[in-house]
View 1: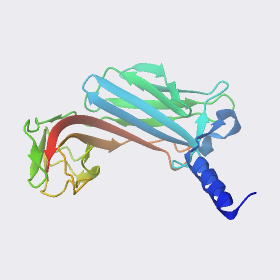
View 2 (view 1 turned 90 degrees about the vertical axis):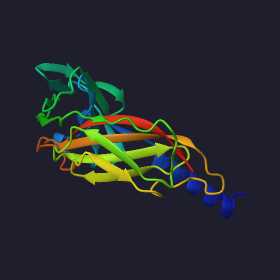
View 3 (view 1 turned 120 degrees about the vertical axis):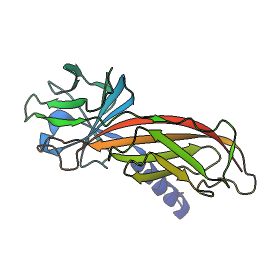
View 4 (view 1 turned 135 degrees about the vertical axis):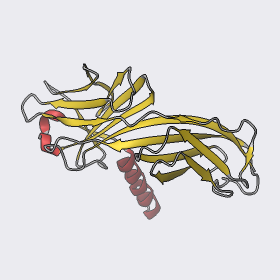
Amino acid sequence: MITKTTTAMLALAALGLSAGCKETLDSNTIRTQGISATIEATAVSESSTSVKATLKAGGDESNTYIVLSGGDRISAAADGKEVDMLAEESGVYVAQFQTGAEDTEFSVQLDREDDDDAPGNSGTLPAPFEIEALPTEPISRTEDLTITWEPSGTGDDMEIEVRGDCIFSKTIDVGGDPGTYTLKAGTLEETSSQEPETCDVEVTISRTRGGKTDPILDSESSFQLSQVRQDTFASAP
């Protein structure tokens, strides 16, 4: 016998499956204008950059990923080297380059077998930087912590992300490129106020600038190029 409770539980389960399922679509069923390309070039050193292109139908927040099929292909180029981007998962394509120098130009080209190509995706990397070593001794969350990186003053966007098992993750938009940022006392919130813990906190700093995408693609397409560096410290109550 199906009760109201059973019906409600089935509805919730269906909703959960709908929200979590990743849908895919063959590229030969969609026009180039309907493809949203989210492209990221991420340099972790002056000799290593990964390029990732996520292709979707229905905008950048859609859950429908486009799988290239037939003669459709996507490639990336930098420093005179062009490589085919390989599928990391459905609708997500990646390539690796052994460069990460300032102003290196990266381009991504989508070639279509039976529709318009989209070759006009490009941008340049911001300058590399390094994080000044964080303290090796645990730092209380009741104290200020100053984070410093250099060189600075580029004018590119800077963002700091902090993550740890004993704190709530936090992303901070630094704005310009001042070369220093202070996490004020109390900024890091404990996940448990009754049993505060000490844990390693990972600090990720990103220096990012925007590139351009081919106008034939969906208007929600984007190209971001970043230098990303990480360090850790112990966060104590």
